[in-house]
View 1 (cartoon, rainbow, N blue to C red):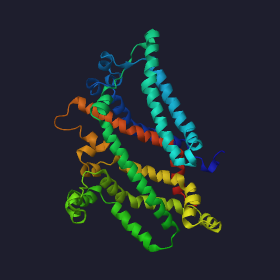
View 2 (cartoon, rainbow, N blue to C red):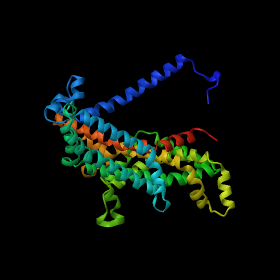
View 3 (tube, helix red, strand yellow):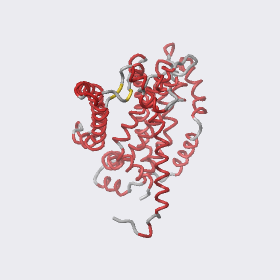
View 4 (cartoon, rainbow, N blue to C red):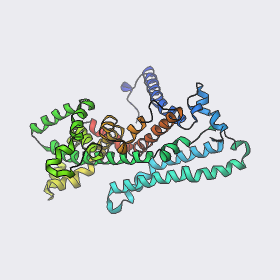
Length: 385
């Protein structure tokens, strides 16, 4: 459908808007692109003053590590097919093959299986195929782009970064699960309640949510450090110390983020007509059954959008996790900061860059898989109807 003539933007405005958006996208994407390039180079190439040396990596190629034209073409083809499958085939497959009709379980199994399949194909099968083709294609098999995965191997295997990844996964899953469970129930109750008291309590909670995290953590820290002494009269000599425990960090992050989660979900529930609840009640449903079987299926885009914000809070948090977790239970973001100290070498810095690139992969995967739900959820929360 064509845009009415009165609403059409002038050419100059469209060009200015497109130019601004293009410049902003370039500015935002450049740091991610550049550290990704650096992470696959030797320290000499990664910190070279000539940008072309950073991109093409002559020292990396000289050490026998690099990609040929065949490697690049097949790699791009596999990545393109992966994106197409993730956006097109995966969402439908997760719903069709969900065990017992549990869509969330289908998504969980589908995402994990898809990620494992990609890792096996891209890092296991593809190098074997390209190795054979490079030996048969002559000039096309000559390395033209320096690339090495030694820093990723050092981070994940030698430095055991997978322990930090598991800690991040545990903390993030706990925060998202508790935040959404409490937030959906509280948001639904507030949206359907005519009481002003709960509304003003939520407003006050949002004011505390706006405070800097350093202020809030400063209040929690002494309690956690002295928790064994505080709990000793209740639990005896075996009273646990909360400091350094992931469960304590989950409790803090949930308490910080919960007002925002409830407020956001409340706005989504307010966009759902009350007539749906009334129809479910007439058909014999209790309040909770109406919430579970009628309202929640309509609310999934809003829940996924809110869950993404909770995920980002826990996944990217530095201050709370670095102050309340010890070295054995650190999550990924504080662990990356630990690479930088007085004795840091250029190799350590490139490994830190490789670790930083690694933690961005799950974020891109989530956005690609849930992009439709996120867009529809943001649209539903932005318009009152």
